[in-house]
Image 1 (cartoon, rainbow, N blue to C red):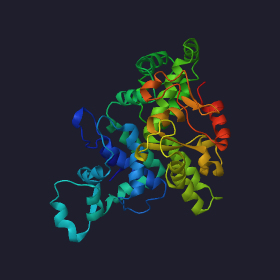
Image 2: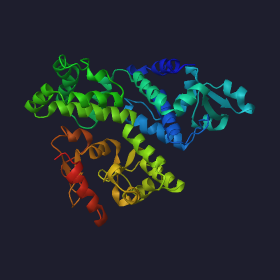
Image 3: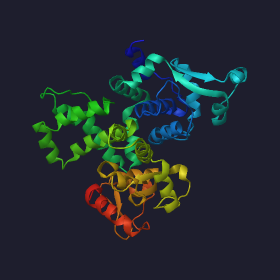
Image 4: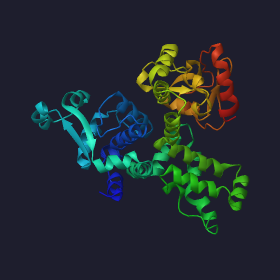
Length: 380
C-alpha cells in the first residue's frame, strides 16, 4: 500500500464519540506505538501489551482526556482491529474463547493475546523518520476541533477565558489578516496540526514588520498567542520529548545501559520516578498520594541538564499533572524557603488548586536547581 493509503486511514480513525466528544484512546495508543518504534523499543512487528506501552499511552492520554474518559489502554488495543491495519495474534488454545468475548480487560489482553501487529508496509513507514512524522501528524486530525482542544489545554494550565479568547482571535483573525500582502499563508494558524509546519510558518511571521509593530503595540500579546499554540502542539505530539530521546539514542559516547537509564528517566519512569516517590510520598505541594496521578518532573529542565543532573533526584519534584504543567511552563516556582511563587501570567491559579500560602519542603541540594528555575524558567 502507498503511504497515502495509511495517511487516509490515520486521518479517519473510527474513534468513540459517545458523551459528545471524540475519545482519544485509539489515537493515543497509536502515538505510543510510534514513539516506541522511534525509540528502538519495538524493533520487530510485534506490539506487546506491557508496562512500557501502557506508560507511553498514559503520557499522551493525560493531556487529551475529557470528562469521564478513563486511562484504559486495553480498549484501543482490542478495538483498533476495526481499522483493518491493526491485528491481534491470539494464543491458539484460546481463539474460540476470545472470539466469544463480550468485553475485554487488562487481564484479557495478557491472558489471550501474544501481541498485536500492524500491516508490514505500515510498520516500514513508521520506522522511517520521513513517513513516520507525516503519519503522526495525520493522527491529530482525529482529535476533533483543534480550537476546542486548545481551549481545554489552555484552561488546564490556568489561562483565563478572556486570555484564551484573545489568543484564539489573534491566531484565527488578526495575524492572518496582517499577512495578506506579505506572501505568507493567510489562513487560520489554528488549522495547522503539525508542530514542525507551525514552527516554520510562525518563524517567518514573526519577522514581518507589520507583525512586529502590532505586537509591540499589543505588549507582546500576539507573540504570546503564537507561543501558546506552539506549546499546545508540542504537548499533544510530544515533539520535545521525542527530540530528547533521539539525542540519547544517537549519543555514541553513552553506553547501552546508561542510555536505557536515561530514556526511562526522560519518560518519567524507572529509578528517578521511584526516588521521587520515596522522597516526596505524594504531590510535593498538595500532599495527594495516589501516584497514578503524579508526574516526576525535573526542576532544571532535561534539555539544559547534564547526565548527572538528569538522574539526580534532588533535581526532581513530584506534582499533580495540572500543577506540573504550571511548574514546567514557568507559571509557578518556589523561593528558597519552599513558598510557592505565582506568575502574573497565570490568570486563575485557584482553579488549579494552587494557593498563595502553599509551600513545599526543601533540602539544601534542591536550592541550586530551584535558583535556576526561578531565574530562567519562571515567568516573572
